[in-house]
Amino acid sequence: MKVGRNDPCPCGSGKKYKKCHLVEDERRALAVRDAQEQGRETGWATSMPEDMAVPSPEQVERWPVRKVWVPVPEVFAVTGRGVAGALREKGPGELVSAYFMLRLTEGGLYGLAHKDAARPEEADEFVAKTMEQMGPSEPGDLARASQLVWACHDYALEVGEPFPRQSQACLALLPRPSGARASIESIAGVGQSVPSALVAMVRAHPLANLSDQKEIAVLTEARMLVADSRSVSEALRAMTPDFDARDGGVFDFTRPSQPQHTAPLSRIQGRRIQGELRVEGNELVARSGLSMMAHLLNALYTKLPERPALRSAQWVSPSLGLRWQWDAQDEPLAMK
Image (cartoon, rainbow, N blue to C red; front, side, top):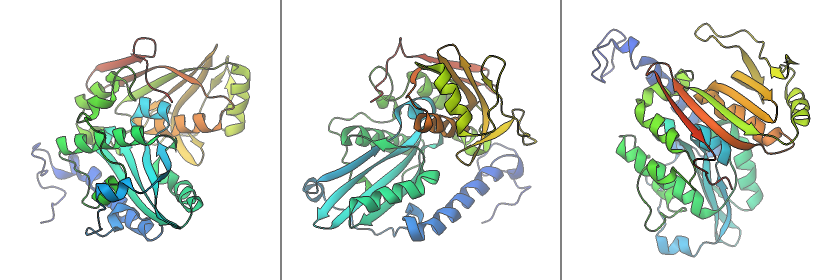
C-alpha cells in the first residue's frame, strides 16, 4: 500500500510522511533505479538474480586469489566508507569477483557488485568504471577485506538492514575469518581500521540522519601531517582552479551554496564538495560534512604527491550537541 505525503510516517514517529522519511525513501528508490540501469553493464546487486549459485567453501578454497581491494585506510578511518572485494580464478581464463560498497553510517552496506571476467585487466577496468558509485579503494590483503565485509554484514543484521540475498554468492569469495567477532566494534580500536570514536558516533545516530541527503548532520574534521606544505599547496592548486591560496594558505571554496547549506561548494574530480581545506604549518586540515568528506579525502589521497599521515579526526553533531574525537597517538590504527 502506497503511503501518501500527508499520511502518518510508517516509522511510527507521529510525523507526516513528507516531514519524516519521504525524502530518504525517494533517494533509496532512485538509487535502486540507477543501480538497475548500471546493472546491465556493471552487475550491481539489484540486477543480479536472487537464485545465483553460491559456491561451497571447499570450491572457493581451490580458487586462487588474484587480487584484493580494500578501502583507502585513511578515508575509511574518518568516514567509514570504502570498497572491499576480491578477484579469484575459477579455472583457466575464468575469473570471478565481488565488491562491497561499505558504509558504516548507512547500515553497513550501500552497494554490491559481482563480475565474471576472462582476464584480471577486465576486473581493473570494472573497478575503475564504477569507482564513482562504489567509492575509494586500493589493493590490499584478503584477511583485511574479509574482516571489514563480515563486520559490516553482522552490523547490518543487527540494525535491521541485512545484506540482500544475492550477497551470498559474493560473500562466498571472502570467507568469514575464523573466530571473527560480530559487528563494527570488531574493527575499531588500537591496531584496527576505524577509531572507537567513529563507532560511538555511528551508534549515537539513527541511520536516516547519516545518509547522503543529510551530509551536514555531522561536521567532520581530519588533520594530516605533511612533509612539504609548499608542494602540497601547489598540488592543491593544480587539482582544481576553485582553490584559492590566500591568508596564509587557506583554500577557500567560492561557488555559491545550495539553499539548505551554509558552506560554499567546489568541485574535486567532478564532485560538488562542501567544506574547507587549510594548510597550517606542517598540517593539512580538511573540514566538511560527513558524506562529502569521503570524496574530499579520496581526492587528497589519490592526487597529492605524498601520502599525508592521518593525525586526528573529530565528529560534531549539532543536533545531538555531542562531539567525538580521535588522536593517532592515543589510539593508533592499522593504516597499511
